[in-house]
Length: 390
Image (cartoon, rainbow, N blue to C red):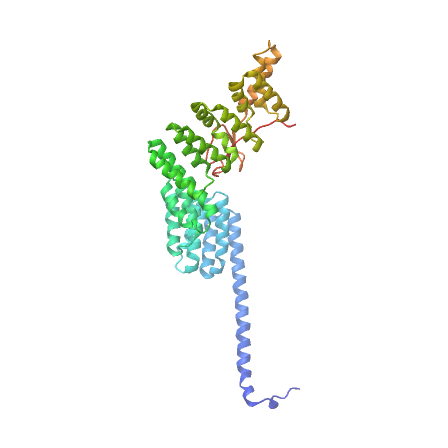
């Protein structure tokens, strides 16, 4: 048996303190378990109300829980996101409004709740309210990227391009590869407005600013090329059009007719033919065979065009090319009904085909958009190249 008399006198004084500490630790542990048990019980009640679609009662319980223990606030964020994802914006708003109104709200959670409430208002289409909340977030945290990006989305939706640019410019230094093209698109929107107003100097100014922020901005090059063409500066217009090859070769199909018209104005069709031939060699995926055939017909006659197109169809078959070739042949032979029916069938198929497709969501259209109306991605709607399988 241990003999306490063998211990030093000073150590005996520690024993009551140690016992007291252990008792407090035990009591704290029991209280924590009781609290956890109470919280678990209340959570189950709240979830049960949710399952029974008694939203008001569920919210009352969750608000009381967060008041007693702000560590449970993540549960509210999760519920809000679920409601928002399901399109139940009114319920998500109630949750976050309830949190922001609590007198005991810790300051460290305020920006997060404001952001979540801003997302709710965005989903509900209340852009003015969402804008106010995101601005409030920036007052508390001026570096908040989430608030800035959401403000940009709001200004984009409202077509307030100047405000969108002001916010985006502040983010440019941090991520120029992402933000640069964004700013360029907004300057192009301003350039389009100037074009409609006939303000040529501001059109050029905005388009050049777009290219400074994004050298690969196809739309800016088209705007500048079209302006030079409309002003009678065909040589300069051709330079802008040809520069698109380095930006995005597929987008050349958007300006190929304008480029050829400029060459016709300058009586330089031989140069346009040489350019088209070289372009086709550099980019086989571009469907240029019909364009080249038309140029050949003008320069060297229909027989040369037919010969060229016949050769191309064998190596790069397409409905458009086949239709063009049959149209040439129809004028040379006494076409029977079968031949005419074949041409009609191809024409119907071609009519039903789409000229442009979004490479993000697959949206198909016969009208070109810079902003996809389906998925809201910029510069994703591209000219289609539809070829027959070998």
